[in-house]
Length: 351
Image (tube, rainbow, N blue to C red):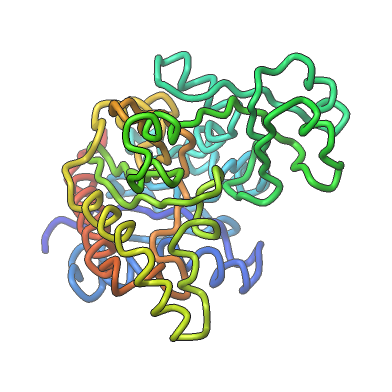
């Protein structure tokens, strides 16, 4: 191959965060993809150069693009890494090198910031009110429109997340039950729209959360989870039994969620929903490699919940219901789309 241009994959350094950080948190989202590239796309893999914060700056000659694959919000959670990433980004900008998910933009996923940027861009998403302390949250109780959802403002976790139907529910929360800094969002009940017209359907019986992925200009459906809990996630959904060590219990539960598995797979196979909206959502955040969680009402209107540029596709150590949900097929498509995007980046010329 005569063209030796490369793409740099910039990541948080193992020397600063220790072996446990590198292999427990970093490897699940990215390393399986790089390993797959080495098997199926060795020419492309040979042109991906990894750089970790804490290392000297890489040689930027013949570099087409830098992908900043780092946990967000980077500035707030890892300030030293942020400074080093910005220094690299500035050096790349001076050379006209394409930046994917620039480090400065990795703070746009703070929940309250994200909501403001999306709402300013006309993207349907709940209002958010940020707070920095328990006392500040309590001072908001009489000003909110209920029900509301309390969540962390910085993290993509469901710990310390609460749905409060009334001001009394919110005031009943103890300081140790809330995340600080946090955000209060309007709770939008998309399930109710299905219950009014199809109460016996899966959509009417459960809350749901869909996930779309955006890589470059291409979006695709990834999964839809269902739950009796309005806070829908891997730990609350109807697939949560996948972690049960008892194979009989897993088999029994598998039979109970066949309808949800079928709908989840149909969503994965279907053409992407709301493609233009997903792209606009990424553009509003200045990000082009991310996952977006959302829900739809019975008439098809989307409500976007949040974006995650450091999403875990592989769910280390094993995907959720790998066989029934055909996760190997999903992961292969994800890798193929990411590969095509990197090939496009390699073809770009710098000034």
